[in-house]
Image (cartoon, rainbow, N blue to C red):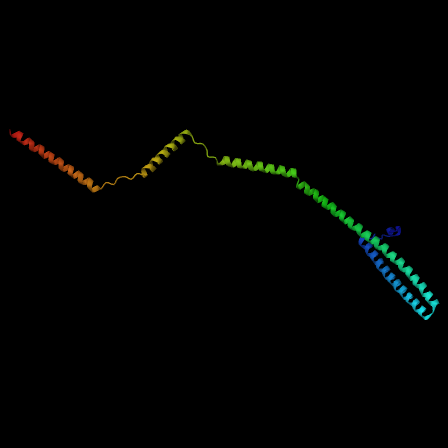
Length: 211
C-alpha cells in the first residue's frame, strides 16, 4: 500500500480480497493468452494456405505474426504461472497461520488437560479416597458393636437362659395320663376298707365288756 493510500484512509486489503484480486488477474491473463494462442494458430494456417497458393511473401508475413503471437503467449503463460505460484504461496501461508493457531489452541488445551489428569495428583486423590473409605468402614464397625453388659446383667441373662433350657427340656417329656374315674374308685374302696376295720374292732370289744 502506498503512502497516498494511507494518508487518504484507504484501508488495507485482507487476505480474501488479495486472493480474489489475484484470481481475477489470472483469469484475465488466461483469456488473453488463449486469444494469442488462437491468433497464432490462425496465422500459421494462413501461412500454409499462402504457400499452397505460391505466395511466399504473404506466407512469410503470416509466419512473422505467428511468431509474435507465440512470444506473447509465452509471456502471458509466464505471467499466469508467476501469479499462480504467489497465489498458492499466499494460500499456503494462510493455511500455515491457521494451523499454527490451531496447534497453539491444541497445545494450550493439552496443557490444561495434563494438569487435570496429572498422575501424581490422581494417585494422591485415590489414596485419600481409600483412606476415607477405610475410616468410614471402621466408624461403621464401631457403631455396629453392641455395648458390653455388666456383671449383674450377665448373671440375670445366664439364669434366664438356664430356665428357658429347662422349660424346653420339660416340653419334650410327655406326662402320663391318669383316668379320673380310676382315682375316684380307689378312694371309695379305701373308705370301705376303713369302715370294715372299724366294725371289726367294735365287735371284738363287746365280748370283753360282758365278761
